[in-house]
Length: 126
View 1 (cartoon, rainbow, N blue to C red):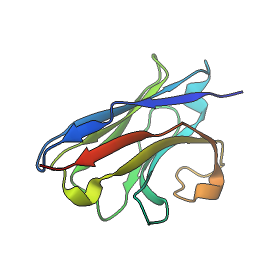
View 2: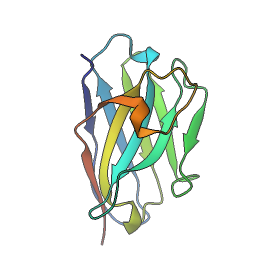
View 3: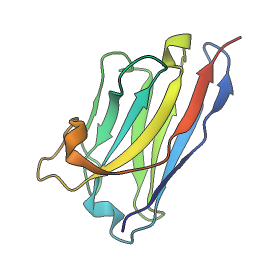
View 4: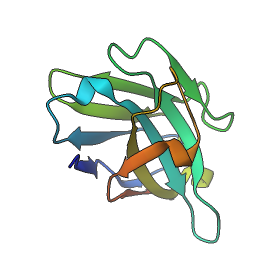
């Protein structure tokens, strides 16, 4: 079964940057739509970003992270990334990567993501 391992979280100051990684165990990683979600204390999990399968030619972001975050993928190394810049305290959350076999080019519905990583904590604070 597909295993996803998220890493790269940590403590960062407002305005700083972090890059999260999501390592996949499958040699057919390219077949999966990859997404990032996050959940802050007391809030529901929310969509962050998604990238299409194969070359990842299409991406989509939530309005709250658009122009600050960039999702990418490296199929050679079976890894997805989330580059986060201009971080604010509102970005503090547990970040989860997820994989989807949906037939769509892109989806941001949690129900379409059947495989999830364990999450990595991002804390933006002075």
